[in-house]
Amino acid sequence: MFQKPFQNLIRIGILLLMAFLFNCSNDNLLPDQVIDQHGKTIQMIPAPDVSKTIQKEFTSPVSLLKPDGTLNVTGWSRYPNFQIDESLMKVEPKRYKRWEHYTFYNEDFGGAITITDIGNLAMGSIELLEFKSGKTIFSKTELVRPGSIFFPTNTTDPIEFTKGNQFIRIQKQKGKRIISYSIQGDSANDKIVGNFEFIEKADEALAIITPFSESNFFYEYKMPSLICKGTIVYQQSIYDFKENSFAVLDWGRGIWPEKNKWLWAAGAGMVGGELLSLNLGYGFGDQSNATENGIVYKGKVHKLDKVIWKYDVKDYKKPWQFVSNDGRLELNFTPVYLLYSDIDLMGMIGFLKQLVQNFSISEIFELLKTEAYLNKAFGTYSGYVILDNGTKLEVKNLFGFAEQMYQQW
Picture (cartoon, rainbow, N blue to C red):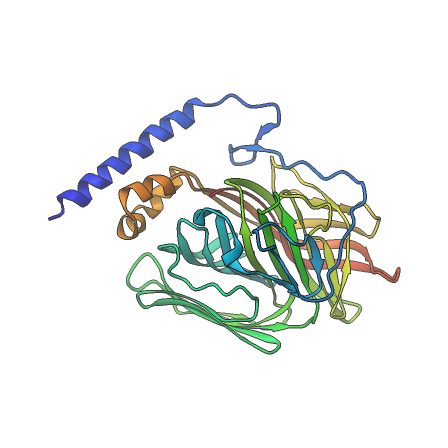
């Protein structure tokens, strides 16, 4: 009775080996490609030009899509004012991507909580990182079939991932998000349990519509002003997040092309006795009506235009630089920890057992095209920002992260 699954595993193994041999023989670099710190061939993400953009703001609720499925609006808002009617979308299901992600951190530890459906598979994942030792204490992604997780079209309804007795639950109350999880590790006795309150310390955040075409878009809601309180229990150790612990929400819904790359950064800390947080990024879509860049201070968004990143792909732990085209932000970022992940065709072999359990052979062959290459540096920001009213704030050792991502999905 084990013959058929065994034959399927052999077929998949042969495919992986053939692809690996092909990739190893394809060493010629294109003009815009470089080999980075990890020996990975990447295409550099071009910096935006310094010309000014419109930064079109929407101040009241508005439909995201027209009745024919094309975009009705592009721009940004201080609140999640863009309303999605998914029935209007004219799209192949696997091109529609949905997720709710939180990165949390303090000076000692950090991690991530993610629930996502990328159209051809869905998953829940948990990470716990220790910055001083450079260790990844726990990292696990649990795969399920697409469509098995209910994703609301708004940012305020709850969401839950379940698989057997494993779960990630995200409840939402006025002014805070209650998150609990229990995820199995690689052995029967290896389990991580977390309980968090993410307290919303700012009424305003960044809702952004970035178009790829007339009907393809990314709707992101970034909330970088979350205070993180809670504990994680793993292997009889307790990790407390109390003082000076922060988090950022990355809520996304979008119709994406197959290949993408992006840069994203966030951070938070006390400046002048008040919470200051930031969200920065670029690398995909048409940002002529709104960029992802903004500062949140005393609960209010101070919108920025373009921010140019400078970093060394030969050493991601060297200092990074961030400079805005409008002169309102200049920051140096000093990494203390680098999270590096490379899921390519050979890397998917780590998910082979889960794939065989949840998907058909034809589906697995399609899923093996999935790639995700991440370099995420945690560290401190220092420099200055200038608010809308011209006030210049000195930023010193503001903790956060900056990431570079390449995606095929």
